Amino acid sequence: MQNKLKNKIIIQKYGGSSVANVECVENVARRIIFYIKKGCKVIVVLSAMGDTTDELVVLAKKINPNPSEREMDMLVSTGEQISCSLLAMALHKKKVEAISLTGSQVGIITDTYHSQAKILKIEADRIKKELTKGKVVIVTGFQGVSTDFEITTLGRGGSDLSAVALAVAIKAAMCEIYTDVEGIYTADPRIVLDAKKINYITFDEMLELASRGAKIMHTRAVEVAKKFNIPLHVRSSFSKKEGTLIMEKTPVIEEAVVRGVALTDNEVKITLCNVLDKPGIAAHVFNDLACENINVDMIVQNVSHKNATDISFTVPKKDLAKTIKISKKISKDIGSGEVSFDENIAKVSIVGVGMRSHSGVAAKCFSVLAKNKINIDMISTSEISISCVIKKDLGKKALRILHKIFGLHKI
Ligand code: ASP
Ligand code: MG
Image 1 (cartoon, rainbow, N blue to C red):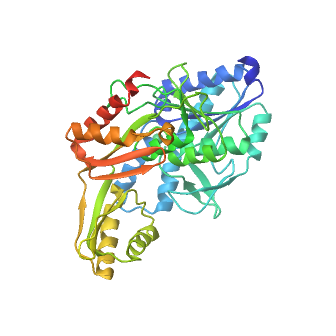
Image 2 (cartoon, rainbow, N blue to C red; image 1 turned 30 degrees about the horizontal axis):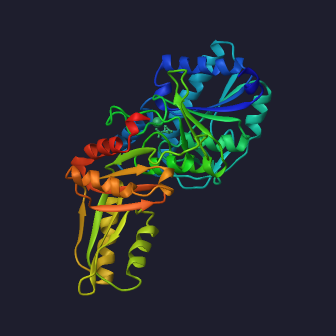
């Protein structure tokens, strides 16, 4: 182990719960020192302490229910400055050289979209200089500086993305994502009590799980890790145990047919009734939604009766008001009927690369739901996943039975 890590640069990202209070910050400092003693150069990326970001958002809304996005970024980016400077102090106390730096100081250059900025490039010179001086470099996660020299943030949970992007820029040997659970689980262990920790998972599976409700990893971070083939090690900052390795190809010979299951009730179903069944209508509807940056997930067009059909689709709950407004306008434009919505839905998904080569997975999934009298409202599939929209109050039950039927409690 010692030789393997000597002189290697490693990135360690600690989430909010790993730096929630003084003891946690000191625990993180100890962990970093453990790696320093092995001869590594460590770059640390931190989230804000505990629920700081949420609290800052609440504070802002007390002052102004409609704050400008620029000022919001100025505000919420401070959370990470607090955790980073405190960690530097904790390391100094233990006689370890360390420096905290903001996204802007280390040259994380983003576009100009406040609260949802994309990283354009990272000028890593400052980090390299500090590493050469033998310092632990502590970088504020979740933020950068725009091409207009404004502070931007990368979207909630964006520190994962900062860590992965830095790993790419620095060509780090390892990128560890520390959290308060032992890794990625076959299902949310708060809902499925016998959920098991997964040792290996592919980027594709992680992406599917993350976009279908598994909350551990930021989706864009996994996308970047996949693009540059940076393996990620998701693990707990409170234990020495190995966590989950997210990688291109797992070292396992036979892949799991189903690697994990996920649940989300964060979406709402919109239905455009009595839409004319002719070419160009769906294009019109979904173009208008795309123009407003609304991320449509599932789409179902029903059988046409007398040249008219219903189109249903799901969007994130936060976009409901905007989507209804646009849909009503579309409905008027194309002369279709009523626009209705259903918030009372949940989406359960099963994910696994083995589905590519195994048949009968969908049949098994639908049969077990049917046997348990769970009606499926919408279905969507990809090469490695199947998702079903069902009634919201049956979501947890569905998750548990799918977890069991695919034997995930026994891995
Ligand atoms: N502190 C930010 C948030 O809570 C970023 C992060 O935690 O990754 O969203
Ligand atoms: Mg956070």
